[in-house]
Length: 256
Image (cartoon, rainbow, N blue to C red; front, side):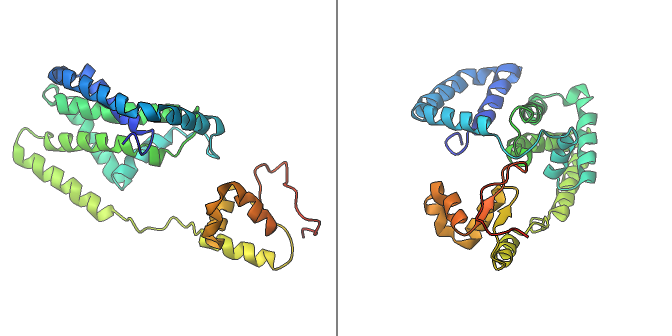
């Protein structure tokens, strides 16, 4: 996990908090220390690359802005596919959390896993804005654990809890729409650029990352040499606009 993306360390951080803070996990501390040591040792050769990529990511940033407070709620309802289901799950979690008998190791683990990552990544996004819906997928696992535990223990009797948990799963299944379009169609970028290009005028693309989308639809082989990608586009009189106040140099042809 840590080799594929540096956000994998957030999961190990939550694991450390659970082992160190939850009393029922005290017996796992020795094994956790050994496993953590082995992980750090195996990761050591990659540490320099990790530090460089992290520094570059934070320093260069993205085109994103700091998130609004409502983004916290947006993430939770995305995890459960629909706002109504999210509210119902949150109500059950709060109700079970208010009962002393519901505060077991599994409840504490789910609560720590969800809140630490959800609030932590949200706060970090004010320093280095990031795609919360992508980065917080790690926190969703904790929310599922917390929601499942709360649904199962919402009633003293076993059967009602299982029925409630089953109803939640069915509700999420019916609201799951993986093929729903977000209305964005990158293929149209190429069509628009080519249509404008026929008028023998320079084409300016904003935001600049859409120029990458255009380049991929134009000719994927351009990515064999990413360093020359911008130059290749300029040769076609296509220019990415990074700052609205500073238009990039284009050819002498008049822009209508």
